[in-house]
Image (cartoon, rainbow, N blue to C red):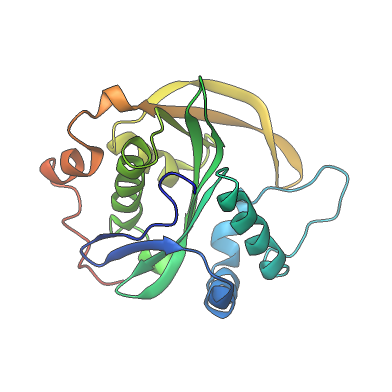
Length: 207
């Protein structure tokens, strides 16, 4: 059994639960409605034509579920008041001497700016450092993605430097800023620190 998986995490209107095959319709609708919002940050394959991200959902989820069974990933669906709002994945989980993982996330534009993502990330980080037994989590973000950078910065992630030409996105190799946090950084829990700082006050906001 994989430590820390499966699991459902909740705080107020925000729920994280395992991504399911039957989420396909909601996932596709969210991706289609937010194509312009998400495409600038989508990974691409060098030398290949861009792939329609709304296709191949079943294969992608089966791959993520296989990785979850192997203890390599935690693929979460992100819901707000039970409405599908996005996805948060803990990936590239390494055990042993590293005990680390990467964080990736996207959210529908209609939920942006309501502190949903930082609240969800805080819950996931606490889970990673708690039940999952990890020591370090990392998020790599393009310098131009100011909104995503703001999320991790207000949670207190440490900027560790630039990974030059790190991931192929939108047809070219793009630099990424590397943000990280270790268990020692949040001995009392990240969600508690986030809420104590006034975070999460906009969770009930609409639009």
